[in-house]
Length: 104
Picture 1 (cartoon, rainbow, N blue to C red):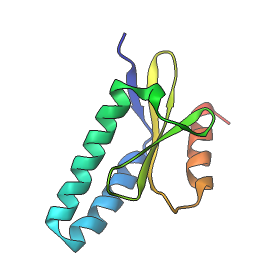
Picture 2: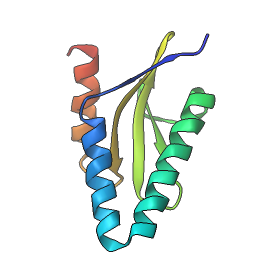
Picture 3: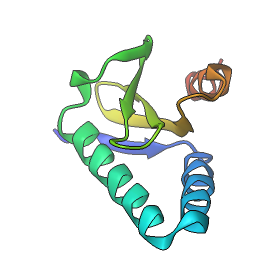
Picture 4: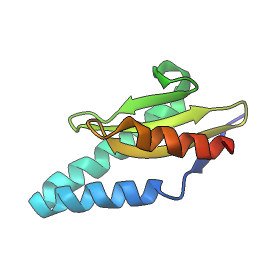
């Protein structure tokens, strides 16, 4: 069974902020960021358990050539994406967001 993908409502805002930043530098760089994100999401879909834990039960998938990580959680029936964060950002941001997914 293919897991259902669920995205935190703020995931889109994370992506918009990052793409606007890279687009402001150059359209080509913004396009490379979008391609890297698409590739990373495809890899997560195909093999979610191969990515390491950031803090159990959350996992992280680094975007190639960009300092961003997609934080997600795997359940029996779904992939829950918590955000796309700069790797030097405060981890409390994604921890809070993932805890919100659990209802904590």
